[in-house]
Amino acid sequence: MIEDSFLSAIGVTPDPSETSPVLVIPYMWIGDFVRGHTVVRVLRERWPNRPVDLLVTSLCAPLVDYMPGVRKGIVWDLPRGQLALNKQKALAEKFRAEGYAAALVMPRTWKSALAPTLAGIPKRTGWVGEMRFGLINDWRWGERSMPRFIDKNAALVLPADAPLPKEWPVPQLVVPPADVVAWRQANNLGQTSAVTLAPGSVGPSKRWTYYAEAARMFAEQGLDVWVVGGPSEKAIASEIVGFAGPRVRDLTGTDLRNGIMAMAAAKTVISNDSGLMHIAAAIGTPTIGIFGPTSPYHWGPLNGLAATIKRATDLPCQPCHKPVCTQNDHHCMRDIPASQVVETAQRVMAGTG
Image 1 (cartoon, one colour):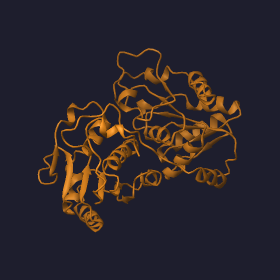
Image 2: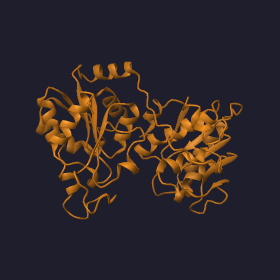
Image 3: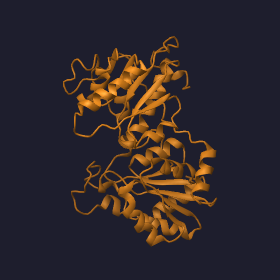
């Protein structure tokens, strides 16, 4: 449970008498989905006896297994950019069978509110947006005035007139140590200390330039190096392995659980601003985030980072929050040397920050 002061400080009283199940419709990008666990924690604090289920894509489904307070995930993949009415109707049937009394619809899209409405869920809470009259029946206003993404999401759990807290409870991913041991054995990874690298991101501008050089330095220090990511990171993982040698393992692929285990087992994780950075931080592994075009304040993990690495001085264009560098030089990332990242990791692993 979250500290008693969390709700009491904003004048909200927990209600243990409410036992009806509630459905959360979260954002489905990996990092946003992880941050959505804060919403689960706030729900469980306000209504400690209500079962909480999450709608989840097959990509993010492994994360639900490690989220305390979630009863289950409703795994369903809706095609992007399509209404897919038949799939929406089938999803609504699944919702109806669960008997949800309420749904929190975090995205502001018309599409995200359709299945809960077709299912007849009595209370459907969400922000005003996309002409969702009739789909959302517990309207909330003022989303655009909220400073952070987590404020926009977690505020939906609170009464409409409640003030925002100064701090929200952080996301948690609890990976059993026995699972980590079994995973290492199944993948023949031994017991050598390892650094996990997450070189991918949505948009090339967020990708740091020198992962291969850093991997070689770690390998020369006697550390194992594991590279994680999805299928789109296969090419860069191959480059890193080819440059840094046999101590480096390519663990990229389609199974997110593999990345979860690699980050839970590592001494430290080094990541761009990506969903995997949020996973590592929520697990509790010391995580080093490398930022160039994006702001750590707006997009860093709520859990905090063991270290945040940026260019020594900000460029006039930082932060641009653009997926592709419009200056054609990528100096915000190119000017961060491999030696700086490796030295930072050494301090983190030694426990000296």
